[in-house]
Image 1 (cartoon, rainbow, N blue to C red):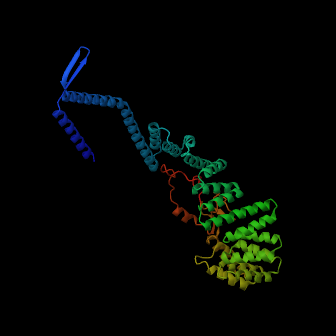
Image 2: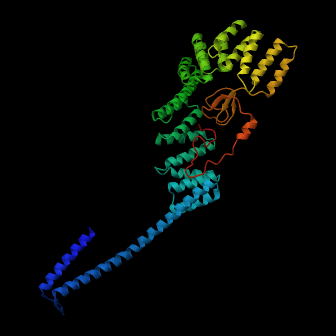
Image 3: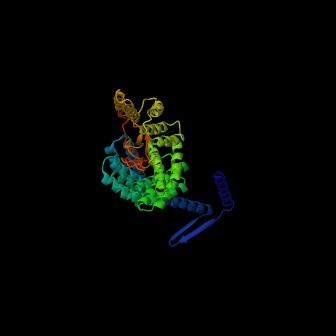
Length: 464
């Protein structure tokens, strides 16, 4: 297209030149004492030359005037490139674990680029990695001034508050972060865990409902969490003396978490307290079919009341019939038989329970066998053999925290050691020697600019 335009201009100029050449004329110019007499063609050529010269002069002046601006732009570009290199080197230093170099590169990046969100984040991470919590807090706080970067500052400050054990501050910051970014999953998990830790179960219920609406959790997990929250609200209502509401909440919670024995047992006890023993019996039987547990057997014993020992054997037989292949069913009937002095029945069911443990009878089974031998054949000394076996026997299941590995005597929504939410699992403890063998060194969580400590993981006790 440009070639066509240039060709057209050349044709026009050629036509104009030919016209002037075919029709010559003169031009007489008089100005004060100066007089010029020339042809039309020469005048046009002179005017063209003057125009070209003026145009070149203007170009030169414009170019000279743009030199300072171009110099400033080039300088800014050089500083920006140097700042970006400093940012890159700082992130690499964080990933390599070099806190000193990371901090130095962060300072250089901030000097070259100013207090941008990226430089502030790098500076905060470097200071945090270097153990300078005050500087890290200062940089995270500076991020709050920017509308877009405020969320990053909140996340960093939440992590710091969790590491320092300041739950109140962390909760306040998490609520603020949730208001600005309600669809962020880590915000929900952090806020929910903090509300649970603080015992704000009604607020946790609302937070969980919001997460369910935004589909931040899968439906199964949402139901499970909802059941635990209802269980805690039931306990809260009972402490306040509102037993009717406590029973209603427990009844709503139990179907959502049927695999947990403690909420089921509590539901049954509340029903017993209201005189609804038949309903309590149905609750325990349903739970026993799914997950037999010693705590359920205790409630079943309460339902048996003061019946004779022989009657209780039959009573526990009804419970065992709900899940006859479970070792807990055999143990429950064996203990009832021991109390009724039915040694043969007790031995038969204990044998079934022992056979269900191919790795060997647990400490509890060894002690029950010792009790049986001491009661049936005290003179033969077999009880001592079982007592000796109990010392080295595999441990019985207990509530183990999946987060910290701590043992808990009773189930609770929060681990008694690390306060993790819904982390307790009913299983046998890992032997200390094996636990030491599989323990790996923990890497730093501040490996890069983007690895901002998770609100749950930062405290070493909140993640889920």
